[in-house]
Picture (cartoon, rainbow, N blue to C red):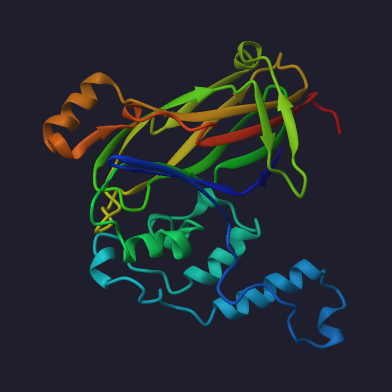
Length: 296
């Protein structure tokens, strides 16, 4: 079984009286990606990409604290910022580490999400004065590709978070979708997957951990639960036909009894993700390439 992160980040920012969708590519670690200045003996057994990663790690290793673009109080509910955060993010961005292995001291930092240090910081430094963030969430990563056999199981990881400027508590229930047509952003050109949604749904059993979640505000101060880790457990049935499939994860409402409890606690500061119109694609997409069991 092989996992490939195909990293696009989907951001949806919902503001009262105003909604806007923004999509941002993953950004390189601070310092960019340039060829390091090393001798020919050192580079003899390293590929160009290995040299780039090494150079980016060396630059990132010099950064042990986040920049002071926002007041420290903004992060008061979050774990302490890891001193190796930027160095670790280089490995994550180049697909050298499994995102499932990290603790909340990493993924609760807003810098974990690729467009925070650009659009996110700018929005929080200059928030609109005539409206406020009522609803909005995103997922990182938003795409993953898995190559696996018939009759296997795997777990995919994503992080679902409140969009920048959102001040409410958002109830989210996770739902499975099988989009009929998807363009998968893989490598330079990507590829298209066309599937019969009803047929595709018969080949997979999908469960979520947790099955629903309460996202806290991301503004003006990050709530301790502004972002949450979601595990998507997938069982590929033995009779799944070989081919390419896309399993989508959408946001709906939580169970009614849970929603009543959350509404009673937060009142007008609570919204459900089913309150707003959906986006034009699932928040998280898993492209599954099913192979005949035992085939090379």
